[in-house]
Length: 136
Image (cartoon, rainbow, N blue to C red):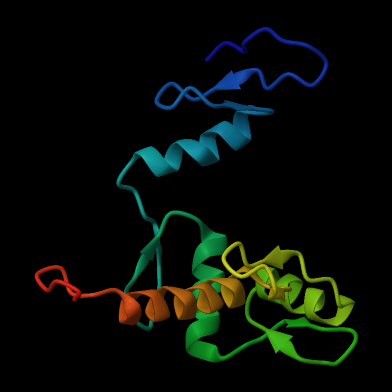
């Protein structure tokens, strides 16, 4: 496959299926696996199949209980780096997720905000009259 033209930070290797571009042919080759049914990495415990070796490695932590990512501030451990990153924000005191309904509540995690919003939605549902019932 011929590289596409571009500037200094060009991604000259396009995916022929989606049209997205990649910096190297090897990254493109890795990406192209998602367009095939090939899943060569099989979990020996539950037989689940994965496209990428790294995905299988992360999946295996579910079976082994391994938690390789530890918080340097409190020592709490996590199976996935993204979960550690979420946790580290809780130490910063920064609460970047604000409730758009009440504006009074702010949270350091998006998931906590989603749970909070569900409370508003439940309250609204309880206060709304049923569709077939008229309010006198």
